[in-house]
Structure formats: C-alpha cells, structure tokens
Length: 422
Image (tube, rainbow, N blue to C red; front, side, top):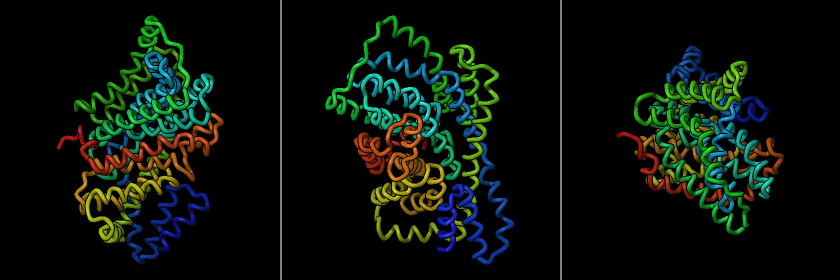
C-alpha cells in the first residue's frame, strides 16, 4: 500500500511515469528490509532491454519520421482520394483508409494523429466538414497505428510476454482490418444522416497519374509485412530494410528528402526511442518487484471470485483496461497491467497470450480517445485547433463500434489468431 502511495504521489507531482515506476520499486525494496535486492536492481534494468526484438522500435520510429519529411504520407492519401473521394463522405473514407495504410508503416498512434491531422483536417474543413468531426475521426484513425503492424506497442508487449515479435505483429492484422471496415460502416451511416459532401470525381488519366506517383511508396508496407509474414525476415530486419526503402523513395522519387535532413531525422527518432525504451526498463523493474511481492497471485485469487470462465475474465479485463487507459498513456499502461494480468490470463484461464495482447493494446489505445485525458484528442486539437470535448461527442459512434469489436474479440479469440502458427 505504501509503495502504491509513493507511486501515486510522485506521479501527481509531475515526475515522468518511467521514473515513478523506478522510484516505487526502490520504495518497495526499502520497505521489504531486504537490502540485497538493490544488487539485482541494475541487473533487472539491463535485462529489460537486453532483447534483439526491441531494436525494431527505433527503426519503425525512424521510418515514420522519414515518411513525414519525405512526403510519402501525402502520396498515400492522394491515392486513396483518387478512388473513393467522389463518394458521399469521401474524404472521411479517405481519412480512415489512408490511416490504415499509414498505420502499416508508422506504428505509433500519437505520431500518426499528429501527421494525419496536418494533412486531412484542413482539407476536410475546406470541403465543408465540421472541424471537430474531422479531427476526431483522424484521432480514431490513429488507433490503427497501434493495431496494424508494425505496432510499437505490440513490440513492447511481445518483449514483456516473451513472444515472437513477428507473431505478435501478425495477430493485429485481422482486428485492424475489421476495425477499419467498422469505421467505414459508421462513416456510411453518418454520411447518409448528415449529408456529407462529395469531392469532384477524377478522370481516369488523373487516377492513373496519382497511383503511379504513389505506387513506389506502397513498397514500404509490402516489404515490411510481406517479409515478416513469409518468414524471410524478422520484424527487426524488416524494419531496417523498410527504413532504407523509405530513404530512397523520399530522396529519389518524391524528391522531398535531402541527405542533409537525415541527421535531424535520426536525432528525433533517437529521442523518441529513448523515451520508449526507458519505459521498457521501468517495465522490467516493475515486473520483477510484482513477482517478488506475489501481486499476480493475489490479484488472480480475487479475479477468480468474480470471473468463472475465460469470456467473463476478458470482459472484466476490457473494463479495467479501458478505465486505466483513460488516464495513462499506452506503453505505461502496458507496463502497469501486463505483468499482473498476463500470468492470470494464461495460467488460470488458458487464454492465448497473442490474443490477450491484442485486446490489451486496443483497450489502452481506446483509452487515449476517452476522457478525462484523451491524449490523441489533445494531439489532434493542438495541431488543428479543434475542441477535445466536442471531438469526443461527435465521434461517439466510433467509440461504441470499437467497444463492439472488443466484445467480439473477447468471445471469439480466433479473430486475432488467424496468422499465428500453432
């Protein structure tokens, strides 16, 4: 209890979440009276990041930075626009589908929201869409960045759960596609109700030119996902190849990337990677302390009095994680919940860890789009000037349809295990 109080206190003071977890672990060691644990403390921190799979994180982040600077994202949006922009609510469809394609490269919800908000929201506003709806839809599209491969959250989860990074990334494909389809269904209904505008249809020549301009950019997700899916490369190796391809496309195809910009790109990617990896270090320390304190066993005893089967357990987890996700960012949420809930899910209820990881990540990301924090909404609001509260209200149907997906995943785990070899 005192350890929890220390964690909450330093967090309320404004200490970064990673340091909060490390300080709480130190408090636990002091209260235990077992000073020998301090000798293991640095070792646990090192072991937490001593994983080949974690190299994929800075590489995926680097790809996202290159895409942003190199104009690759804009080409993908233009290609989606050429095919479905003329439908009623066409720009909204483009927003959802372009987010799906960009998600297969960026892998970060907040980064994706920041980039896509700059591209999509001003264009949708010019065409007559409400700014709050446009920004809110873009924020929900950012969810796909944490579900579709390559997902940084899936990489972190796979390391914590000691799973294959490639298998974990594959587990997100079908749920990501289903969520995209559900979003498009919501857009169709809203478009009919609110009479969303149509864009001018493009001629065949314009469409061919747009597709030709964007075609090479599609090689990035094809190489990343294809090489992982086929077994030709691990997630880390695929990310490295994808980074090289992104540089070549940005430099020699779009022409918007110069080699003089590469050091700045690498610096930004390195800084963000350092933040993520320090959180992984904190996760390792927290897991060590929780196991030593027998916290998972005590929580499991309580949960078994409430949930008597796997489906009930998963529905309970959905509620717990959604509440946690409303106040804590995605990766810190993983750090705080996975060491406690994963052993219960696998050992007590026999739930596949890949399936459990998909449900955990979707819940925590959905929390980024829910009050009182709603980090993705605030990112979109900072870029566009929209109102976060109004964004949540006008996009409530997307929140509800995501909850429907979570219930389906809880009842039918096979939806997330289609591409997992058993």
